Image 1 (spheres, one colour):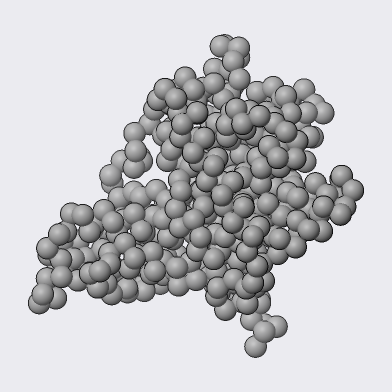
Image 2 (cartoon, rainbow, N blue to C red):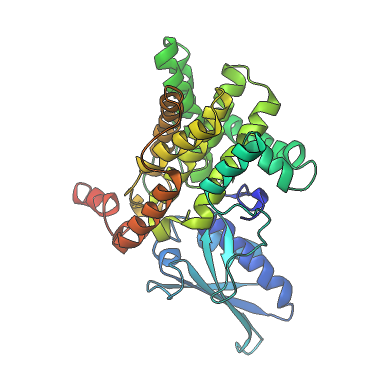
Length: 402
């Protein structure tokens, strides 16, 4: 597995695969094609079908500015991955002087066809949750210490602490803002109202309101093109921050315990990224919201004193009960159903953690098997339901809004 710094990335919403990835690709291409007078970028598959709603063109044009860029939208997919893009550098006569075809495979990561397994080197020897549990059993250490052992010295106190601060900033920004989100749905922000109402409720109902309000705050910031942390993607960016925020500010857990929980969550997300996919265009929203819920459930189980096997069980349940979740955003915007899914998944993550702690961690289906099932389910899913806005809610919405 790669370093967690390639799972937790900070960038412009609303989509890690549709904004952060293409923006990074454009910046890299600009750096190596210094003689370009103009650019042409062709977007394929999901990048084309939902790119306007996901602000893909804005992300690319911003990265290439002030040099002009033409965006070409091509609905068909390239063979390697649904999120393909071809970047071309042009001279004054409009002739191509350099080109690069790459793919945004989820979480902001880029990969070229035939270029190897990943963008960055693998530093973890563990390849499955079974490997992680074996390490924990043999060493007698908690899962988060695998991160401390493997990453560079000071990674938890340095990089993860910085990421945690950025997560908090996204929540704080989202709670302060009101009004209507950009795009054609005229969707009003709800995070601040949820927080006001939640403070009036009893503890049980209030927890749901607080978790929802924090998740909505981040998801709304993301939907409006704000800056967020991929956890593991922009579309699912509100789930892990909301539960961490709740346990930090409402339950009084220390900053160090929060950072350790982030480390454990990162291992869970990395395992899904390594063995399946976190790209909605490849496996549907089960790969985004499902993975984020698993990360958050594992983090909460640890915060509540769970053993490694209870943490694994919490993560397994959270992912299992998102199997088959489609990615069918209305108008290609990361708003409906995406924003509410962040809130519901945050609440579900806590429920999964609490459920796992009622057991000894023993259960029938392992996390690793659910990850493989999720990958197969995603590949069996019609492309209509994998971030193309050609099926599901994206089309049924218009049947009642003609």
